Length: 405
Image (cartoon, rainbow, N blue to C red):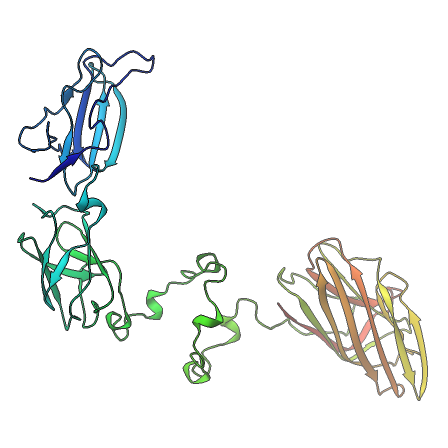
């Protein structure tokens, strides 16, 4: 039997209690790594005379003999006082200069029925043992390995799935780990081992693949071959607004036929751009149309910019008074009918910018346009359309918004 000196307490070891006093009569138990199964240790490199288990320390806290362990196997040691109080547990302890543990490259012959040879030879299959080899042939089907005459064991991947042709290839090191029943191939998984239809939508649970699981720079243009992703591979209607986490969303249109303001609230926090749409919007008076936004409440100060109106070829303009984006209707009247689009976009943080234009073909040949910005106190969640005096009421038309991330 091949044995090697234990990396723990192998030779000349002396143990002490927490007070620095030699652990006289201490007990050193040995087990297979990660288990409570007792494992034999030996007194010399001949591997013929076993230590007691537990090993009883002498009056100086020393082991009475050297400790040699089986080659290719890891051990667990538990040290206790003479009265059975645990001092420490030391798991996954290898042996020193163990060729089988630190150089597990074996020699293999065959194509599908592999015959393996290791130096020194293994005396038993041990759960967790790992071997590697350079294949001499590419497999053509299911594979078995008989290592050192210990009997043929199936070689699988993904637990118990038999290997398909090409899984083990010449020029590509194969690494196997014994699970107690079979050897599992832990590398060299190629497209040949992924059966048609094996990866399905049902196997990719919602949110199973997240940005957190994809490390920065793991997916690069270099890894996406030219033309690998094509429109042919994206079936029509496969990508829909509902499948986009931040899709284009239209609110419910509001008839602007009553009230002094039209409010849109509960706008999602991820929104980065809002399109405000006006259709034949009219009010009862001549006060300028005002647009306000806010987070938690409407912001009523800090609006900057200006608007201009062109009426029958004559231009006029005004700067915002600060309480909102006030659109100059020129020679406004209660019969003014406003139709157009105003876009509001997030510049940075809670600062938003606006650009818009609408026309009034009913009461006069009038076009109104403007731009501006405003910082708000919190994340935007609302938009209001009202008038500067706040008392004129809406009496015709409709208003809606479209928002996006």
